[in-house]
Length: 255
Image 1 (cartoon, rainbow, N blue to C red):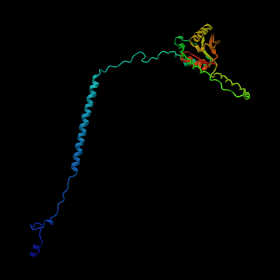
Image 2: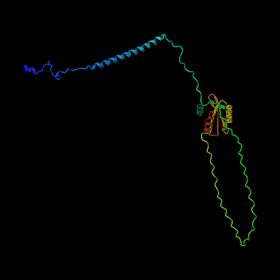
Image 3: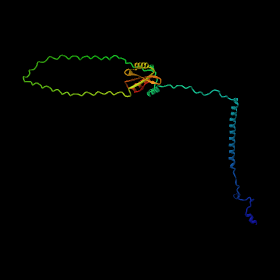
Image 4: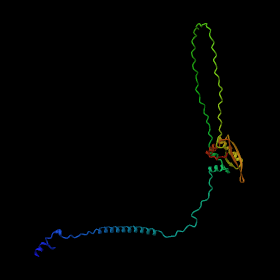
């Protein structure tokens, strides 16, 4: 028994080998660090929310306390009023369109806005330079004495034959092509024939291209009134109306 106890070492023996000692397991508390971090973040968010909420609450309280709470009465009168109806102004395009449809239009000619007729300026003729005749050639020298001519008979020359003259046909004359675009224009409608003729006299005096046209006054019945249409023919109606509209006058092609 004594020998056996010497060979085996007990737990309290000082000569026990260190690598045969039992190892105690160490547990690290890894969850405690992350939990504390989340707690501090939650506390910081709560503090910020309390500060921001208190700021807006105090601001709204100050604005609410600034008013006196008096009731605002609505006005007795209408706060929206419909504008008075105004008659639409008739433009030149509407007048021309209405006249082209055959409707009666009361026209007023503004002679002050018409374009002036161009004036031809007479220029002095250009003087042509004088042409000096060439100097006369000196007199021919004295004729030399004629040499003795032979007595041989000279045969008279035969008369030259004249070339035959061919008859030329006359050149064809270009036919005049009539102007397109209609031949009658209507300048306006007036309440009397005298006003229509006076308007034509004024217009033909201011516009030289109207002087060669043939004017006519056509009475028409419009309801209980009689209107007198001033018309002119004898030219290119579209061209004439275009020139009159450029000068500010009313015009429409009717034929």
